[in-house]
Amino acid sequence: MILTFVLACEVAFWVVLFGGLAMRYLLQLPRLGAGLLITVPLIDLALLVATAIDLRGGASARWEHGLAAIYLAVSLVYGHRMMRWADVRFAHRFGGGPPPSPTPRYGLEHAALQRRNWLRHLLAWAVGCALLLAAIGFVGDPDRSQELWSWIGRWSLILGIDFLWSFSYTLWPRRRGGTQPERPAAGAGSDRPDPGLDPEEDGNPTADRPGAERVESLNRSRAAGRRGPTAAGTPR
Image: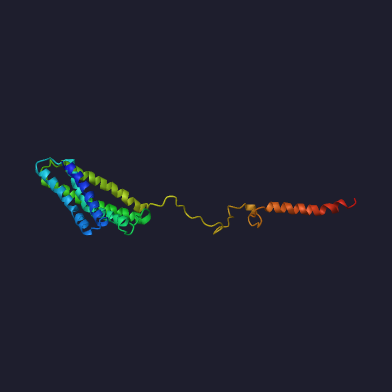
């Protein structure tokens, strides 16, 4: 029952969200769209009430009850951010609004973004643990609430792994793929010759001119032609 309720609340969240944005930007009914978006917290309240009724009826806490607590915590911490994310893109696509700001993907800005995301995760974990502990106290029976304690342990492990992953970018910032360090200009700060020239030709003004060898060959041929008749008419 609770699992079905969690799935229904997730579907209802997106239906209400996109319905409100459609009324605001497609149908040009901003007040009605805002009124519909205001009802989003009521979905979380309905899930909270359903979970409490199920536990109060004597049911043992199962993994579905822990999932409901996590869903509520994530919705409270990330819900407004998700609504703003969708609103900016709807406004840009259908309302002529500015394009969304690009997400940093490299360098120190990306590392700072990862740290902020982990802090939000920490806040969601704190809210979720508070809800789970409240549910444990609400049940009042350690044997019936053991599964809720397991959820706290699992989420704490995930939070620790996320910490290592997120803060690793602070120590080793992500760099753009394929970026190579700039090479110094040939000869700058060094007495070594340009590697593109042969060492024996370095400094020769005709060494890198196309056809230099052919010009020299033609000059030698012309010189030999001029000396040829004189040499033939000279008596031995």
